Amino acid sequence: MSKPIQQDEVFRAGEGDAWFRRNAASLDAHAGHDWVLDTLGRLSGRERITTVCEVGCASAWRLARLPEVLPAATRRAGFDLSADAIEHGRKRDGALELRVGTASEPPFAEQFDLVIVSFILHWIDRSLLTRSLAAIDALVAPGGYLVVADFLPDSPCRRRYHHRDDVALYTYKQDYAAAFKATNLYREISRSVFHHSETRGELRAADDGDRAACVLLHKPLLAYPER
Ligand SMILES: C[S@@+](CC[C@H](N)C(=O)[O-])C[C@H]1O[C@@H](n2cnc3c(N)ncnc32)[C@H](O)[C@@H]1O
Image (tube, rainbow, N blue to C red):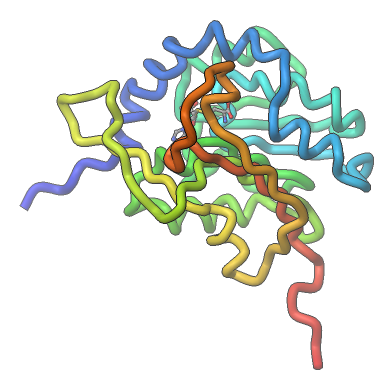
């Protein structure tokens, strides 16, 4: 029996770079409102966040803007499976620590005060989902924070990825913050619900497949009080 093709392989083999080429101009121009930056800007105690890692950071446009809300974040790291996006980010801002890598095998072994995962979990091959969630959890230092932004439909669903018809690729929409909370290692601090099309300046009739949420989670030092 032939081995089923993994989405990550397709994205790593070129679709990630293709996504970046289609979106490079709008990513670079991203100077306006961002739900992740907005959430972090309202976090009390954010001055204690000094190390940050963004999983699937694309060209690192958000990491470049991070000092707007986290002035103490002296170490800003990120990775993405698109080598073109990472190369672009490195050329634009040499202060960022950017590497090529995937969520299931992050190219960083250390832990960070804050990890950001924005609109990448819906791309991940289902056979790599639990491994990716575990690897993301391993990046978050005890006492640190995790921001999960992604689509939030009424119930889990998948949608055919319309940029490729030669191979069956899907995006999978579900409440990814719930997966981290189910471990009991994370507590939800805030949740902003919005429509993804708004972030591109579009207006669309209400559609639960377009609904998204930016969820801020805290990983307490003591997840299991003794009693
Ligand atoms: C929709 S974009 C989001 C980019 C950025 N996080 C943001 O919020 O603007 C998805 C990004 O995730 C990257 N990506 C997809 N699957 C990935 C994986 N398994 N590991 C790392 N990055 C991945 C893509 O290359 C792309 O840059």
